[in-house]
Image (tube, rainbow, N blue to C red; front, side, top):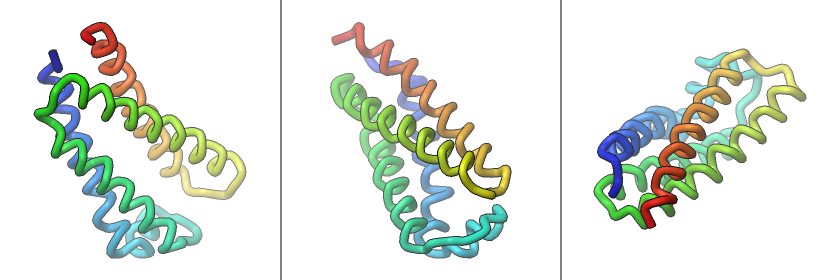
Length: 126
């Protein structure tokens, strides 16, 4: 049984991902300049945008799926959010980046714990 709240979180995750993905794909320099980013690599920014579209889009498409599909999606989200936190933290500690970077790290940490909580819940309902 998949909790209704998890299905809701998948829709929230889709919205959050798309709010950042679309500007990263089509106007990466403009978007990251708003946050005070010192330099922008459009290639990398667009790659991140594409990843957000893929993960967020899959969240929306699979929001009514079975428990097995949710387990697989949660595994993907846990891998994505945990490695993103590691990579972003290393970057923030080794460079001169705006404080908003720590806010982005915090968002990923928050999502990691949301996904971990639900993944542990679904572990027992195999």
